[in-house]
Amino acid sequence: MSIWENLGLVYGLLGAAVAVFLAGAGSALGVGIAGQAAAGVVTEDPSKFAKVLVLQLLPGTQGIYGLLVGFVTLSKIGLLGGGGLELDPQTGLLILAACLPVGIVGLISGKSQGEAAAASIGIVAKKPEQFGKAMLFPAMVETYAILSLLISVIAVTMIQV
Image 1: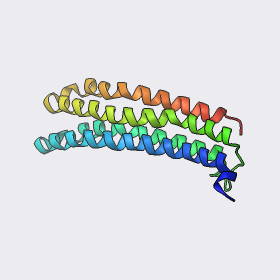
Image 2 (image 1 turned 45 degrees about the vertical axis):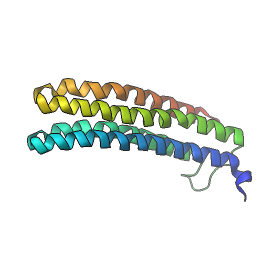
Image 3 (image 1 turned 90 degrees about the vertical axis):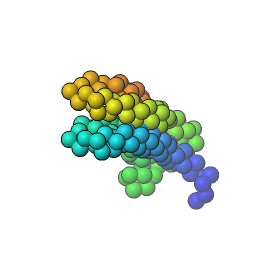
Image 4 (image 1 turned 30 degrees about the horizontal axis):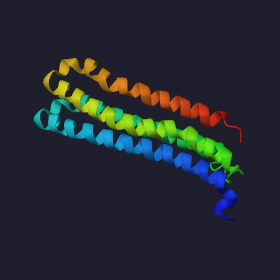
């Protein structure tokens, strides 16, 4: 079988890959940014390790969201079931489009959340008692990642195959 005979399936698989790749890249960037700030704080005061670790891990959720959409998509197109469905190219493109929100928003929000987490780590470095307030800044960025997860999951699951 050629790629042209399975173009719909290829588009669907590309959608899953885009969701995982872009959201995962955003998480990797964000966790890296926050990790640099956390490492500086822990160098000065190792007792703050647990608090800064929690803040560093927050941007990692976008990668999880992308992975979730990837699994939902692979299941939808039959690749987790063992074979793969025969999808027309239009349906494959719909699935690809449905995966874009979590991928694109995950990329941007993961990096942005890492920056917000790094700033919050700075708060914890100077005023550890303000940890609860510091958590709110990166958590606000999380809202948009959750919204993109929601729309991608709903869109993928609602497409008729």
